[in-house]
Image 1 (cartoon, rainbow, N blue to C red):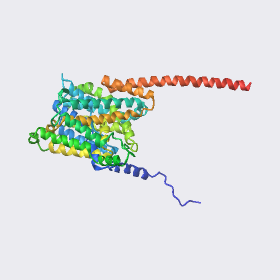
Image 2 (cartoon, helix red, strand yellow):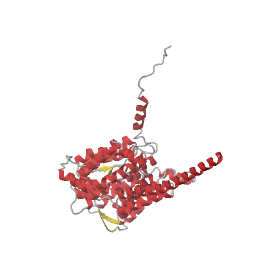
Image 3 (cartoon, rainbow, N blue to C red):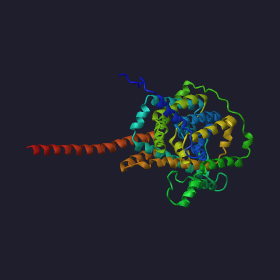
Length: 458
């Protein structure tokens, strides 16, 4: 008897397509309020602005081109990942380009370093090697890298707040005065205001603590603290130097293809790409995926996708002179801290960058040069603390020990790669010690049981 029910030879892909469509359509869906997402969108500018400004002043980076390309990066990654995925400068490349005073890197050499790093990350991503690394690298080692990066941000933030800064030379100057638009009073007031509005950044903070406290917290959650502080800093730019409005030029910068010679490839790779590659693997991919899984467990992202994303961004933008970028765990922590909960946060940020890049182009550097450094330090301080707090989930003394040693070596050695290698070795030694003891105990127990069984048989 032939059944009337027909069974398809090939399973339908309709459910899979529906799930994928639902995933992407929810990327820009607001999880909180528009104001919270707007506030979160400026959460990573404490690291973005100083590095971009320094590269523009020292190395003649085209700010307009960088704003336009990073705007597209923000919008596309927000859509693909559905979280406030940051687009941050590659810090090791920027540090080499800015700080080595004997011979600053040229724009072609900086772009060569960015493209070289991008190729490595793209290969690691598409081959699946990055997913393997993400799966087998011990969590305490990753937490140690996150802790060191967070504390490094916090230390830099305190310097920004306490001392005058010269981003062109990368040096701190005299102690900052108390009064003025960039004085200590303004910075401390901004810190207190953000603590009042955002608290510790935990969504569950204060639940069940009483009607009055809950009411105060519910009102404060509706205030876009970071956005208000950033807009206040922008107003202070014009108060500090009213003439910058006259120097602004309307229209985008001219976008040109960068001519990279063989010598530029050699210098860029040796001096800048080699120190950047391990940092990108650890902080831009592995640490970002770990932090994202903590903050957004409902939207798991693969190390392969993040690594491929970093590679493709730079393989496109660096040829046109856009700053080499990556996804940073510090930027993700900062945007989450100030309210970013979905891709809408970076959509707003990307839209703002695109408007500024197309309207003012490279002349926008005149405004950034007057932005109060103390306020940038305040934003960076909260980003660093939020990133460092991700390391609080260590479940044993051994894990905490490995994490703290990795963080200490990373900070004192100024190298995440050095802290990572030492952390892996330390973790292996701790596990080897435990494995040997457990193995001996199991072997002795099995031997005793065997002897007892033989005695009973006899």
